[in-house]
Length: 440
Image 1 (cartoon, rainbow, N blue to C red):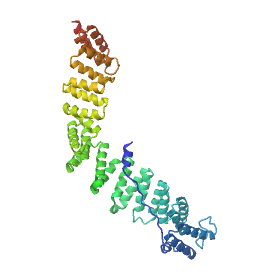
Image 2 (tube, helix red, strand yellow):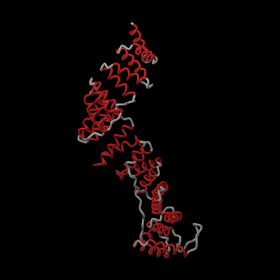
Image 3 (tube, rainbow, N blue to C red):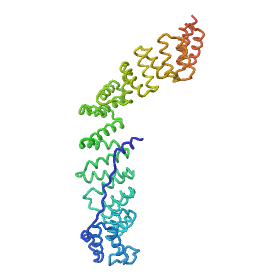
Image 4 (cartoon, rainbow, N blue to C red):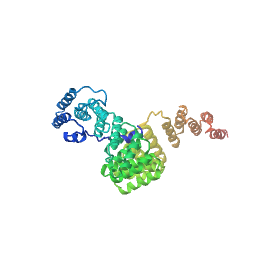
């Protein structure tokens, strides 16, 4: 999964939409030119809507419209108000409250066609599109509602910005959010910042999101604060701002030293910068605060091995092998034993976990252990097995097979192995020198 999709999944999109159900008196104030017959039917429909008798309200309104002739042109006279925008507005609201969104859309479109400045209709039309998951159209309706209003309140512009975000149209969403912040600086809320951050991340503009994220880490509390802190640290790492990431992770561990996740984050930052000792220290503290997962145990053991602390690595690798045996961990366990010169124990672990191993790396380790124990005939056979597997270690294996044969006084086998090793440019010089010494 991409980083962007991972980030977006941490949010739940919510558009604030509402249906403006007006009473008859409010309708009268909206339309001074509303004929008396239309006023009466709206009063009747309004009473039915207040009783939630939406089906009867629809019947009342459509029966009223049916009394007038069909109007095909907007400039045709309609003295009784059969097709007044307010009639279509109430009708659209009835359908909207019944969740009959296609019919609501049809009625509300008729209303705004007759009165393009009817802001409340644009809002409810946006609602119908939102419910039908036509988020782009919903955003456009919210934008129109904002433009047609006195722009004193930001709600419609905010819903426009979030609607575009839900439609995955990040450019228009970012533009709407920017206008929202510029036009209403005294109304900025945490929710605005959250969704603006999401829009900027989705639009691949994470650097612009950083000031907003920092603000959210300051304003939030509880789990929300923790979430935004994690997001800020994640963005620092994604943007390769390593100095900032290290400083912030260190600050978090100092401020909340008993919080395990910050020590894990610090270990990750240190490790990404190649500071193994510091990463091991942070991971060790993390392990004191919470049980390590198998993957974390392996990382802790690997760091100990890399930093030449094999004794600590051995115990951890042994624990991992009990629960999750695999060739990679076994190989590192053997390497740790080798560094401690505990060759017999290493062979015992190989016999236990990989008695019939065909893995070239494990076979090479087995041969090295036998060679270190001066069990040269066995070592020679093991090296030859690796060499004949035609792995990347073949040249080295032939060279070591030659030495093991030489120590076994098997000069013929030794000469043959050295000749094979000389075929690899990496070991030609060592193999040639060994053959010369054998002759002498």
